[in-house]
Image (cartoon, rainbow, N blue to C red; front, side, top):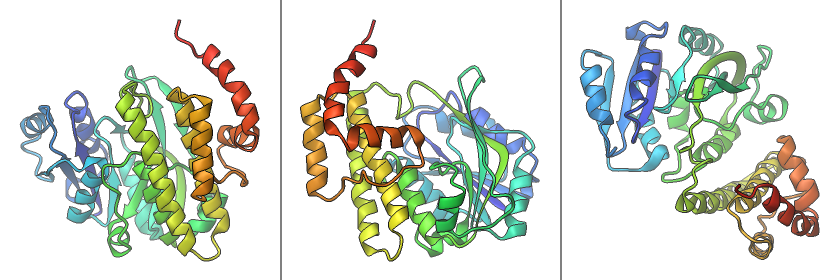
Length: 326
């Protein structure tokens, strides 16, 4: 079997039919792929809907488990996949028609461990709000060279991964963690020997007000902030064990440093709280601000405000004024 499509399910009854249909109605023969639905103890009717609408789909199976979060659900998929490659598809996202066979056959022909493909960010009404696309011009790189020369996305959902590669290298997701993709792919880049980027647009990533990065829930905002720091700790532990990977880790940790402080600003933390966190990160040797970031906006933020905290103190009131609710 060529491909396993892993779809975690939790409170997605509104979207899951479209998601699954985008796989079934794509251009792979049914014998070439399987769909693994991981029911992460979903409290809505998602599973009932799936079982009702897709009861005659022989290559679809549902695995139910106690709630482990998105990362834990994906891990269950990795462990149960029988396809040579696997693809993570969130249940509120969907695939572009007639694209699967192209990327799967490219991955098999080139024997890459990871193949990255393009995606659109789409609104509820189908309007495209961003495009993610890149190419390595048919060149295959190991993870470190790929990161420096190509770079694509931190998402786990715009990639094909060789199933055996993930299992053999023990590349599983952290459970109950936001930004699990960033942490997971940090380890993937370190281990991968063959990576390829293609510009083909395959994924359609739904942008909704309830996504983790846009949700107004205070609890979710605080968890996001705490999880960013948790990933910083995990990433730094990898850094301390690494050899000759300074550039890679300093960029990754610098991105996380900037992301954490930006998150605190979005969470309406005052300057004193932010300054104390910055000092705490310095004490823990987690405050990485001296390396250029690939993300241009975060790199500018690093230069202006993280290296010069007084400017941040002066700029915060203006930011609050410009973003005040009308």
